[in-house]
Image (cartoon, rainbow, N blue to C red; front, side, top):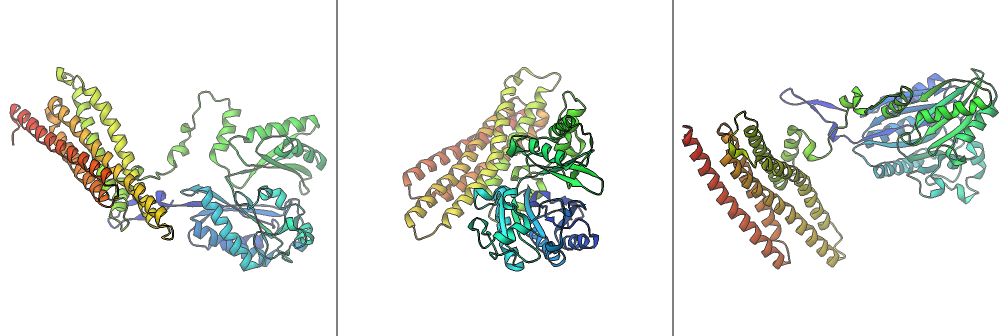
Length: 530
């Protein structure tokens, strides 16, 4: 999240404008601190990214680094870190428990906020191509970015590791890289680049030095051998500690939870007469993955994730126009972009009018000595709320409809008929949205008339405001409909819609006059005449 100070000194959150990607590159170095620091510093010095975590394991001889930012800066940071790793790591002299094929072994991009998996796939492919061209290292795309189904699984891509791939690339067609030279880099090997969802790297340590036990448990646990559906597992030895480890990647922590993985390892370990001496999370883990385990082990009853304080504090920021703050929405309207424009503003004004009508009705019904005339105001509130919600949806839909028109105009002129048809269909849609806004705004005026007759006299000024807002929405929406009708070739449709617009505007004029007279009459009766 970034925060900026406005000209008047007010602090405004910019989260809703950010497109956040996490990158979690794995480097084949977990022992030399100076090398790890050099790689990490390259990320720290890149503007626009935040370093989240550095995890280094000497036995694995591997470091996992997590950082986050918008797509462009994340790509820059990943390239800068890769350059340092390629300069400082020589796989010919690298030994470690974890499988590896490159100095920069794997570079995954993970969508966090405001970006889709497709965006991360594009980012991965763009990074992979630039990486290969810049460093002359062959690149294999994996997971969601994979060009072929056979390369989705990282373990399949990395099969043979550095030494095996050195002999196969350039000879075996199945080992042809997606980018870069068809030969292994002499010291940096090859790199896997991909896009994936968040995964949890989770290890369980066993109180034995028998590596065979860890490998057998990993075999029984992993998905490809019939274990948990979203778990990848390997057995490793931790020589410095004289124990072994079941190392896992939980690729879907919501379906294959941490506690399930732990309990299964413990169950299998018991069969071999081996104790579990601890477990660890490598890198970062989503809060929900830990809450799952807390809920399971604490046997919580009627527990809701909404009870987690941080979930409330750091809830995702709004991503649509109607979820934005008033300040941000007004900034969007004031910008040089064509959307949101008059159509969206008209719908928003109509929604405010509906809200005021509901407010007056509720105030009236809430009075201790409510007059008999309040009967029926419950229905006013019900219909008013429905109109408010619909008008809020129309705020967004109007912008989307305009964008479709622009998209149609950008179609190739080499296919004039297809382009012409697309423009016509998009323009029809662009006229239907403000027509709905117009219709809803007139319906708000009908409710305002009822509230003007039955509502509390102390709230009649709010009725007047609601009527003024609804009339503004009517005029704005009608203007948006008519400007779209001008360009349509289907004149029968255009004339039919124009008549609807005329009739609705006429009704709005009549309702406006009636409400004014009703308000003036009731004010006179209570001595409130201007």
